[in-house]
Structure formats: C-alpha cells, structure tokens
Length: 232
Image (tube, rainbow, N blue to C red; front, side, top):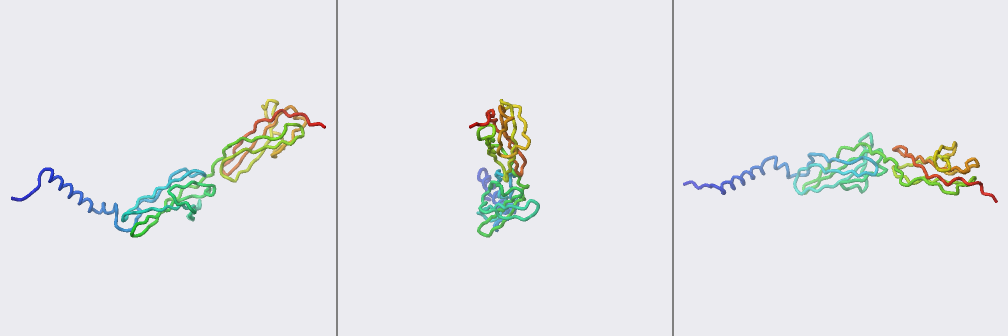
C-alpha cells in the first residue's frame, strides 16, 4: 500500500510547497535581491517651494541585498539649468527653505548602501523657490511731540518676509479726529516738522514696504492734535 497524506496534513504540505515555490520565483528574488542596491523608483520631493517652508523627500524604491541603509543630501540647483551644488549640513529627509534658496530649484540625492556596494539616485528638481510676501508684524508709529516746528520721526514697524527689504514713507495730514487723511506733498522722509497751517490737525504716516515678492502697506495711528509752536 502506498503511503500518503490526507486531511489537515495534506493541506499543510500543499501550503508549504506553494510558499517555497513562490519564494523561488524571479519576482520574489527581485524584491530583495542579492547584489548592490539598485534604484527602481526615484526619490520624490513634496511641499511648498517658498522661502520658510519645509520640503520632505522619500528615499524612492530600491532592491538589493539586505540590509540597505540610506543617506540624504539636498542640492541647490540653477533655476534654468542642470548645475547643482550640495547644501552643507542638509543631510536629513526634510529641509527648511531659506532666503538663499529663493530663485533656485532643489533636488535630493539619496545614496543607498549595503554589504555589497552603494548607489545614488537623484530626484527631479523642484520648481523655482519663491520669495515670501511681506507681512506686517508690528505697525508703524510716530515718536516726538506733535507741535508746530517740532521734529516727528516715523518708525517703519516690523516686517517679516524675504529680504532685501526697502521702506518708503508718506506723511498724511488728518483732521483733529484722525480721519479724512490726505498725503502731504513732498513729505516722504522718515521725519517731518508740522507747520503753522497744520495746527489743530493730526498727522499719521503711511509706510510702504517692498521685497522681491511685492509690496505691502501699513499706517500708523494719528498723532495728538498739533499744538502751537513752543515759545520762550
């Protein structure tokens, strides 16, 4: 009589033989591999390409002998060409964009290593990094005594955005309540001396800040009503 298997024993043997067959197929062998790392899908960068934002990178997909380790290095590239330079110390899978990246593109270089060798693969370059628009973080203000002939000085306020930053001033004459304001012709310096004809009115200053992303404006609170010239 020929010996055989039946029931659970036969099912177990069938599953074992099936799994062994699958493990020996070319597809299964390629999933792990036995040689140096080989990149099959390039790394990918995600995030908003704007000054101050953080980009993240995947390592891509690799085959090769286990265990594979990965090293990252970000590169800054020309906006309209292939020239790229490594960014010192940018060796994590994420990178925070800075002012120096504006006008450039970036890519990530991933180097995979195992006991057999190592190989590198670079992502596609990002779009050009844009500057951050200006944001008013503290309004302009006026210092000094609001009096005819006294020197008033405008403080530009606090601005956040990609440098370089330029500031322009425009003094405005308002009514005694600080309303109905109009620009004073030629009053575009950071300081101003009220005149006799402005006595009883108020002043405020309009600040226009400019950077590579564009312009933004902010206005100060009005001064107290302008008092008469000091005598004696």
